Image (cartoon, rainbow, N blue to C red; front, side, top):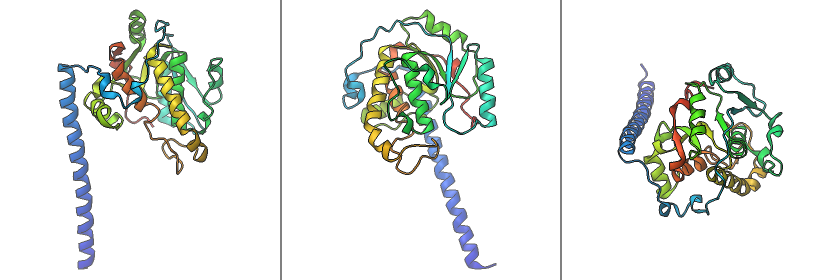
Length: 289
C-alpha cells in the first residue's frame, strides 16, 4: 500500500468524522436548549416588556384598528413562479383539498390580481422578489386585507374546522397558529429580541400555517413593516432581482426569513395575549419538496 495514499485517506476520514462530530454536538446542544426552554415556558409564560425592544420595529407607534372583523372560513395557499409542483407537492395539495374540511384557494401568478383590494396595489418591487419571498409578501397582504387561513403546500395533520370555530367564538383572539417546534427555526435577530425569541420560541407561531382575523392591530403592523422593508430593499432588488427562492441570484439582498419570520414572530411576542395556540393547524414539516 502506498503510504502517501494511506495518509491522505486517513486525513480525509478524520476530517469527515470531525465534521460529523461537530454537527452532532451542535444538534445535541440545540435539543437540550429546546427541552430546557420549553419547560421554562410552561412554568413561566412569556411576558412582553416593550422597554426591551426599543431598538426594533416593535417600538413604532401602535396601529389602532377595529379588530372585530369576522374570519372567513377558507384557506389560501400560494404557488408562484414557473416551476411545476413535484409529486410530493401535488400530493400535499390534494391532501389539503380533502382533509382541511374548509375550502382551499390556490393562488398563482395568473390569479393573484383577482384578490387585490382597491387602493392597495402590490408594492412596485413585488415582481423583483424571489418566488418564495413573493409568497411571504402575499400571505401578509392576504391575512391583513382578507383574513382566513393560510397553509404552505404541506400535508395537514388535522381538520381545521374546530380551529376556525375557536377564532370565530373568541372575538378577542386575532390569530390561531401552532407553536414553533424548535428554537433553530426562529430568526437570528440582534440583542434582546434575538435572545428572547430563542428562549421563548414556544411563544411564537410557526410560519407554515395559521388562521388570522383581518384588519387587526397585529395585521396592520405586520403589513406596515413589510412595506417598510420593501421600500428599503427596492433599490437593491432592482440591481439584483430574485428568482428561485432556494438558489437566489448573486447579490440578491434579502435573507431567507427577513420578510416573514423576522416580522411575524416578533409581533407574536408583542401580541401574545391575542394569540390562540393550536397544533391542529400544524402541517407535516418533513419530506414536502
